[in-house]
Amino acid sequence: MEQPAWQYGSGVPEPSVAVAAARTLVIDLEGALLRSELLMEALFSRPGLMLARFGAGGRPGMAALTDILARAEIDYAHLPYDSDVLNRALAARARGEKIYLVASRFAHHAAGIAAHLGFDGVVTPADLAAGDTLPFDRAAIERIEDRGSRSASLKIWAKALRVYQYAKNTLVFVPAITAHQMNLATLGSALLAFLAFSACASGAYLVNDLLDLAADRQHPTKRHRALAAGDLPISSALLAIPALWLFAVAASLCISPVFLGVLGAYLATTIAYSLVLKRKMLVDVVTLAGLYTLRIIAGAVGVGVVLSEWLLIFSLFVFTSLALIKRFSELSMRESAGLADPSNRDYRITDLHVIAAMAAASAMNAVTVFSLYVSSSAVTPLYSRSWMLWLLNPLLLYWFGRA
Image (cartoon, rainbow, N blue to C red; front, top):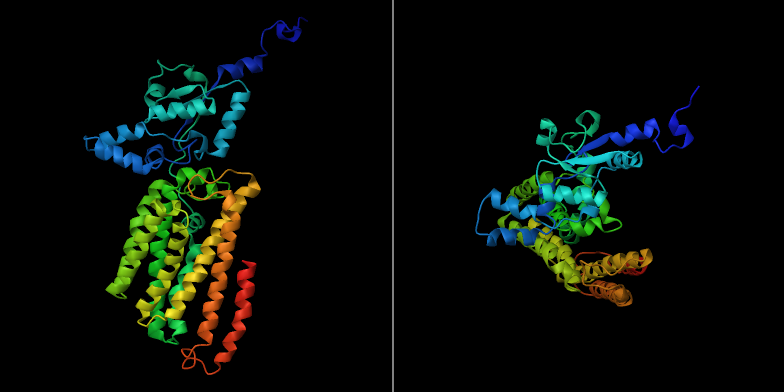
């Protein structure tokens, strides 16, 4: 019996290979391959520049904004792609199949993504519906379609809102505790202040992550943040931000207008930090220390107690040390990973030793201030056995030394 010609090396491809080569994989860009929205990705690629161009364009309206966003510079290499869909595409490419993306808008960006991933091109939904203008056989396609809107789980929301960071906001309880004003009314006001700061801070964290999308995706650990990884839609974050801040305002008004003013100062400083201040050497450290101290000031305002200057000075040194340790940890991680100096911070890896020395000095200053407080006359009316406070000194020295 005569064997098929391809078994004798005649150059005719095997039937399975020929069939595979004739097939085409068609993937919906938004909703299937991309775990994000192109419109939002274009807007937050460089939000300041995009809004500046929109303001200077002279053509108001969504059409002008869409035209500007269509020309935005997006880092296609670090977009949040769906790993399962991408693996299917790579497997299809290995079989010799052609791969096309389906995109109904932002054709320039869709073509850029296709070129970056090594796909064959882009078609529109209208092209698929018509069929006569397709660059492939419509009868031999496999399509990965839009999976519909992704709803973020509570775990993802908790991660995006930085619920684990709410421990910082317990600082609003410190003035009531140190002033020995622990009663039901005081604790109720402090709890309301805690909720207001938590909601305000969560909204600020979302704003910060939106502004840092590009930088976070190139960071070895921050790329796993909910917005950077595409686990939380950008549009959902944009809706959550005003809702969180409205709740914070309502809770603040239940305490006092002065407390709302302090919370407003905290939010304004936080936004300024996200936009500008965090890129200034040491200014970022002082700002972070100030934000921590503002929580203590807000706690004093919220419960109506006089803030001790000892507590204020001690807090400034403690939080300056912690902020410096945070910068040291980030630079040390980059040094260990063999990464270059951070592009979104005004620090260099060679600054590590100076930052470590400053962190240690700030910590020791905090211990000195605490020692002076314990030996002062301000302690006697508050504690019957004030000498026992000296036992905290070695604990503080150990804790700061470990940090």
